[in-house]
Amino acid sequence: RMIGFHNLPQTPPQAPITAKIRPENQRSAFGVRRSMASLGYQETINFSFVEARWEHELAGNSNPIKLLNPIASQMSVMRSSLLGSLLQVLKFNQDRKAQRVRVFELGRVFLRDASVTSSDTTVQGFDQPMRLAGLAIGAVDEPEWGCKERAVDFYDVKGDLQALLAPTALTFEPAQHPAMHPGRCARVLCAGQAVGFVGELHPKWRQSYDLAQAPVLFEIDLEAVLNRDVPQFAAVPRFQAVERDIAVLVDEAITHDALMQAIWSAPCEGVLRNAVLFDIYRPKSAPPDGAPVAASGKSMAVRLTLNAHDAALTEQQIEAAVAVVVSNLAAKVGAVQRA
Image (cartoon, rainbow, N blue to C red; front, side, top):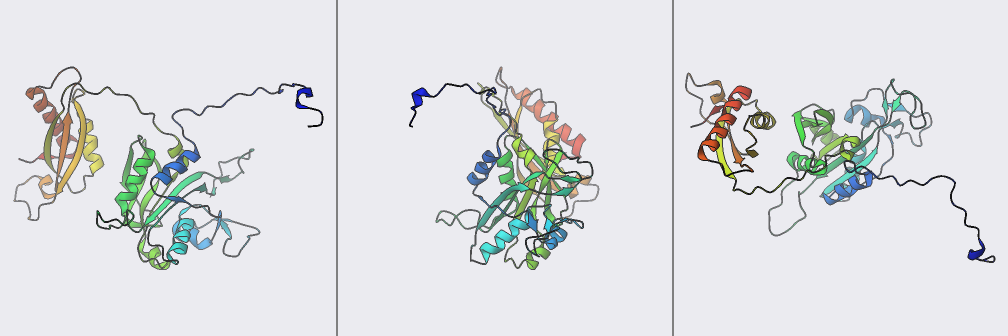
């Protein structure tokens, strides 16, 4: 101010300045936080030091990383899972009469890994990946007059995960997790790789933590969320689509994912545009003697959408495409078409 800005020398910086542009198929951690907030979750930030009991019960970790000088006796180990911190947040809120809680945390966990070597960002023998975890309990939506109140369930949180990673398609398979209900837990797979778990809290831990209702939780690797597929442009079809419904009898063990894989793998010459499961029926009476094995299972009804870019489909093309799908279902999952 005393010398005058116009008298200061104009000295360019010595180091080159290059703007770093994030690839389109990646998003930032801040973008993930915004996406979670848009799904109705609130972010929490918790200590990385947790109770040893959490590690044993919720993570199945019998050898957690212990602190030499913990800040409190109940915070003596490093966490290998974010679920314990979210349950603590839930308990704190429910003790203050909060009925509807939807929270998430994006943070680091600490695992023993002998393959990790020391560097500027790593410590030898310890892996420190970033994870995203969420918890939901209470009503699905805020109270309103237009619809009845319904408690959040496994499928609501599963849908939140699918919306978070869209357009990347996720698959789910039954799994076991120390913190989750044995029959209401699924492993989350992205491009065939296991990236986390989603499920309802185990009844034993619900009683142990004195919760009135079992929350639905998920925990996935952050790297899987940051990397996403770039949407591809597709021209709007010029011709009207055709829908056909098929119902097939399959064994009780056949899952929705297995059924859809069999449908999409059928050689339909590109005319199959969509397939949606819209009904599942389980016969109450036993099948007659001599009935096929699939008849003792369940009936799954699927709506097929067919279309072509170059011309309107003829009835022969439609029937041929449906026949190919039914034939592939029979070959892949042992399905029998219902009359």
